[in-house]
Length: 253
Image (tube, rainbow, N blue to C red):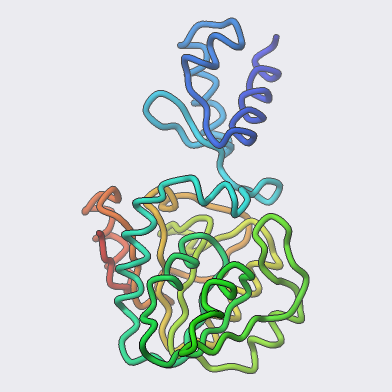
């Protein structure tokens, strides 16, 4: 098996399982662990995986994106802490946009149930989470439903959003970097996120530490468009400070 074939198999395994282990790859491919590590370094240089201690996980791109079901299995305790801290930033907001994705869904669950809130979302899962609360008015944006994320996109969604002004938008992203801002793989998703930020008086990004430094295909907002970034203490304090110098408050929990 050539290096190219081996690396293609590693990417396939990472995308199928969500992560790969050096020892397991070495055994499966019949090569030395150092060979696997060299392959992972090459794949990371090409932006296809991000290495971890003892393995790697796939990087989302224009051609590959993890599903909502998979996201519910990764970094869950970290995402719950982040979601709770993000919901605490609600303030006196009465109208809220909640983005697609698992962390925004957890934010929706953490919003106070005892006060009236109007929530706009493209996420079927988030709409379902909030619909049973008598104090919540849920506006589900129409459009084409993406099967992997169970969220609506395309011009119907963006046009409906353009008619709103919301107090606060909770935004997710596939990647955030100081050079390229907030990014996502799909142009249709990017347009919805961009329109949500334009519609919002305040915008909060919430995401796990692995989002930082990751760059996807479509840029939908600069870091400076955010009022706050909520992440975990696994993002180094020095890096958090660099983001804060660009404008937003950075909260690590």
